[in-house]
Image (cartoon, rainbow, N blue to C red; front, side, top):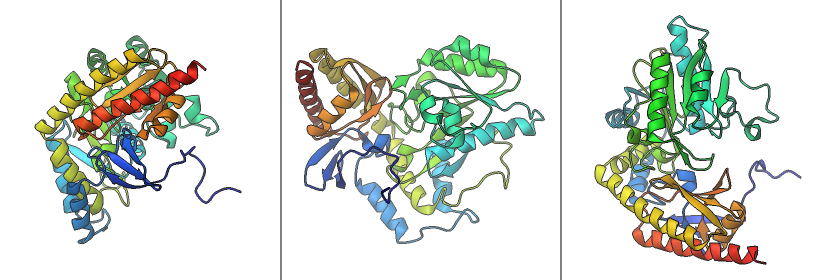
Length: 394
């Protein structure tokens, strides 16, 4: 008999009932150190007082009015995002998947309004993840994402990750945009080199097409800059942001330049819940903390400490781990052993990690994780790796 919750997840046998900072408490009382952060969502950990206060204050005032009216909290958050990014305008959604839908619509509408309605094709990269909507799976293109869900939305093609010659050759007169994650998350924590990201921007400029950056997982301070593309010194035309922006409350945003957004006039897009007062009150509180230079400096300091310790862990367990990947506090351990075996051993050590493609486990802690908790994470990863190594030896 099918359960009441549609069984589309292989859930771990864990039930968390409370969170405190970088820790989660299981129903049986065990305390787990959280290096998943809800898959890069809880950027300020669990039950951060500023977020709790923002949500509670707003909940006691007004929950929902719809986008038929002005929403002051939405406008305040949009102003903060515009002030701290390349963007001139913002549309709020409930998720990263919804961001992908709008980004696709936006770039196609842009060219339609320019009198070039045949420019609809969007080029992505293999290994990408852009959500599980019809547009998102078509943009990613992998068999794992698309099998059984045809016919796929047309107008998408993929080139090998980081292959700029293939990207250049894929551009035609019907190309509207390129879409990519500056750091692939689900794809195995694969950062695009700054030089390559600059080259992609130049390729788009020379071809006269738009660049969409998907920073749903790598944005909002995760890499030590507010947005990952800042490391390369470039700007996109359209950017997808979600996960961390709500600090745990469902919230997403599409940021765009005035030019790229020029086709999106009244009636071209909408959302019942997107940008509601509750979400935007929390998002504003997140931005007030994460966008501060001192906070981002501390993310970079802790990231250096964590990565150095992980390098030592890899050296100590050569049969279990191959290398450390990533940037900032978006890190991955490329495994030699099965990443799922490492994941299970970490569970047994009361440590939360997240699997990814290419036999990687993701380490995505809250950005405000303490130094002591980083040290404890290394201790628990070492214990997990020791168990895996012993099992490999029989």
